[in-house]
Length: 212
Image: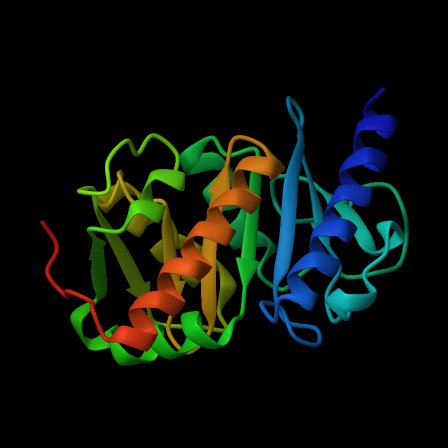
């Protein structure tokens, strides 16, 4: 049963990779995607490192434990950012975590890094985020400095998630977007909503840098 669940998740992650590549959100080998296979014991399906997302296959998905160690098959290295996915899944109780490297997420993460983030409000598309019911919603997008030390970055991600419990996403500076959801469908919807909003505010310059 667990093997069938992992197989189904792997196929869906590969499909997401193709869709996101076609939309310009994960060019080349950028980006990484994961989904929780089980909680007890914790098992996470995640994209292998250095795989072109436009050519992602189910066989490029690995299964890891709560420490990011590969379970089962030999060969292949999980995404370098596996620990970030595990931290998000643990802190948010998320069933899926998706990470994109689009132009607009990269640009905005650079422009507003000094302020620690920015706010989006007044857009109807905000209602596509989990639990949001009005365009008057004010969404704070935290921005964290990028870091190649993954245990240290995972700790900062955890601290950020604890500090901004209502945020649906965060950005890594000059890097990209992380968001999550109860299911892969939920997480994919939030990527679509956020990528739309980032492009809209990037093109119009309508962004606030306060956090309430």
